[in-house]
Length: 169
Image (cartoon, rainbow, N blue to C red; front, side, top):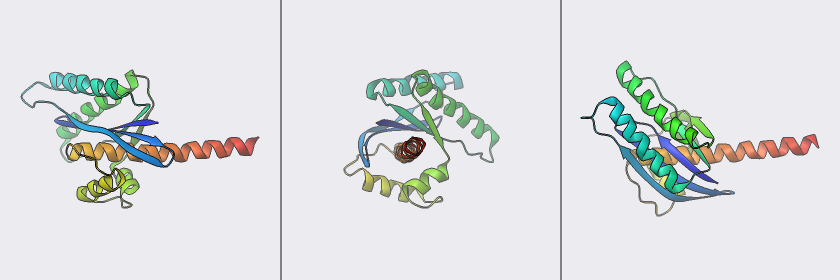
């Protein structure tokens, strides 16, 4: 299974691709889609859409995972993040692949073991789980963490479904 993790952002949208074979995960690629703050909002969103679409077409993930939005004190910033998040959801949905959504604390808890882990702890764990990975920045780190979280949840769900089917037969 190939998983694409997406960390939504209007300026920097992180993405990470991992392959999952049973309990083994391996790094495929990671990066950041960027938009220019000098452009108007519609142009920035279109740029992010086009860049993320190119990543999806290049790597062909089987599923995607997107970080859920948390509400800031700044309502305008939260609204803009929500618009960027809609791009992060729309690109894989348009490609017809299933999408998981995870709260930031759930991602940290899955990857680090602590829901309020620092960014440095998340990066450290990503480097441990994906040896030799070259990270494209903090947004790509978050995207890989989201992909790993989705892989664990998808495997757990699959095992549960298998057990339920076995019990029913």
